[in-house]
Image (tube, rainbow, N blue to C red; front, side, top):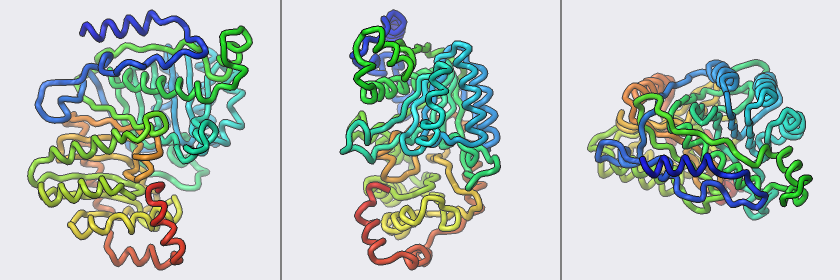
Amino acid sequence: MIKLIAALFFFCSLPAFSAETSILLSHKYEDLFPAGVPGNDWFSKRAFGGNQIRILRTGQEVLAERLKLIESARQSILLSTYIYDTDQTANQITEALCKRAMEGVDIRMLLDSMGSKKFFKKESERLRRCGIGIMLFAPGKWDLLRVVKTMHEKLLIIDGYTISMGGNGVQNSYHHIEPAHKFFHDMEMVMQGPVACWWHFRFIDTYHKSRIQDRPKEAMGDTTAAIRLDEHLYGARRYPVCYPFNAGNSRVVPVYGNPFFDGKKTPIEDTYLTALENLEEGATVKLYGPYFVPTKRFVKALLKARSEKHAKISIITNSVESNDEGWAPLVGMVFSVSKLLDAGVDIRLWPGPMTLHRKVGIYNGKWAYVGSDNLDSRAQHFNTETVTFTDDRQIVKELETEFDQDYAKTKPLTKNYFKTILDKRSPFQRWFVKKILKFL
């Protein structure tokens, strides 16, 4: 408690940032959010309590909730996403954000340079005139050797007290509004409490580091002209703070992966493996992997859970009919999962017509997560990703029920189905995919 009070006093007493200030969050997050709740398992040692959780199951619910949350903001709105389109639902959210910024809410937006390029080109200056700080997460611009890095997280954080996170971008397709090229079958988790403040500071950490990378020379320094340009582009140099107030009884373990700033660390996959290692004999594992091209390390962990714990593992992924990412991820899956099938891992194919886009996992009915990770290699090595685990019994039960209902609509992946995928591909295409598996 003393550490927490001291850290909060530190944040509240900080002066405005100078142009070359190092990141506000250079100290450990544990100072703000000391982990550890009653219990001896891996989850309890890393969790913090005081949260309230709700699950949103449809795109229409997600859109309504996003607009409601934006309207409810009193101090700050932080938004990061891969896809921010220029269609009807994106325009609704844009208008809502602009309105709140003009009413004095501090708004920051960090968007992927590929998925949101069109929106940024069209709308960034208008949003800046509204008072919104906005930029593209653009590793290729900052460092050509890291051009493959991508912002794949999807966060909407309100006042550091409420967060909506999952796999939904800002586009008609996610919110099930016509016209749309495809509808996605996704899910969102809305949380209130200390976990939202944790993600608030993680967002600011990434935003500030990105700002340093992105800032033009004219916006550097402490001259009046530099400060004016810097704050026009990115928002005020002083960032909004939050307080980790309790909102309920749910315990959580939030996990963030950012290969651009954190190097070769794989905190999300590490957490998956920890959960697998702590399974009981005969446990069940139920995973959504929309574009399932797992790393060798994750495959090895699943095989170990099968052989040593006799775990029953089920994974739902997209079929040829429902996949929206072209042929490469499907071919990559064929080259990655053969050993899993041989070991009795139950991989299931989602039939469509919607594209499966849920990123959820349930471990033996005890722990579950919702996030942005597709269980592909890219997520661990090249994408920013977000997941939050919980052991809230009601939430775990709800997620497991959703999985079981989706499972009932699937069919098993077999090696005969591999032929369906590979027969349409040339020898060169197959060779090429083998060479780039890490990037899929």
